[in-house]
Image 1 (cartoon, rainbow, N blue to C red):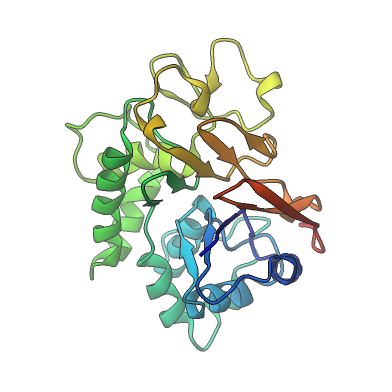
Image 2 (image 1 turned 90 degrees about the horizontal axis):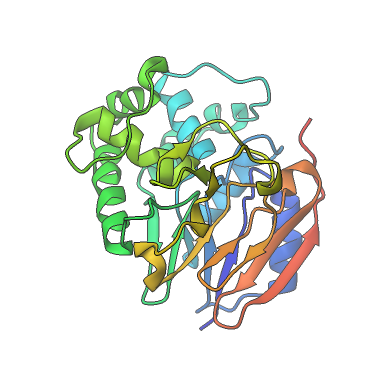
Length: 270
C-alpha cells in the first residue's frame, strides 16, 4: 500500500485528474488531501463528488472548506473570488455539505500527521487530534450552523490558545493553528496577517514548523495552505501547497519514500 499526500486542490479538478493519471494509485493505496478541496478554482463540485465517493481518500478540512460550510449555513457572505455556487446549488448539496462537516482537522498514523495549516509548538500530535476532534464533533451535530457562526466570530479578535478556553473562543483559537497559521512569534502565538514568503516576513516571527523543540515532532507534519511558501520538505515537515489555483503546480508526494509527482496547473483563479 502506498500513501500519496496531495497539496491544495481548490476546485482545480482538471489538474487533479492529470495528477491522478500520473500517480495511477492502486485500489489499496491512500490519497491524503491537505484541505482546501474547494473554492477559487472552477470545479469545486466535481472535486467534492470525487472525494466523497473514492474510498481511498483521506481529507482534513481547510479554511476554504470551512468557508463553504459558512456559506451553506447562511452566516457568511460571498467573497470576491468565491466559486462555490455550483456546490451550493447542486442537487446533492445537502449530502455534500454533510460529508464536508464530517471530515476531521487532523489525520495521523504512527509517522505522519496531516493538517491544513499547522500545529501549536506545544501540541503533541495526540493533543492536536484531541482538539481537532472536539471541534469535529460539534460540526457533526445538529447545531452545526451555530457552531460555524461561532467560529466566524463576528470580527472578534482571536484569543491566544489556552486549554482553559471553552466554546467559540476555544474553537477560534484552535483554528488559528489548524487552518490558518503560517508564521509565529517565539512564544507560539500566531502572526495573524502575514501570508507571503518567509524571507519577506516582519522581524521577530518564524515559520510555525521552524520553532524550536516542537512537541509534534514525533511525526512528520504534512500540510498545505501556504502558497507563498511553496514546496517545503524538511526532516519533520512536508509543505505541499504549490499554488495550483494560481497557475503554478499541483504536487503529490509518496509519503513512504518522498517521491514527488507534479503537474502544471490547468486552471488559474481570476
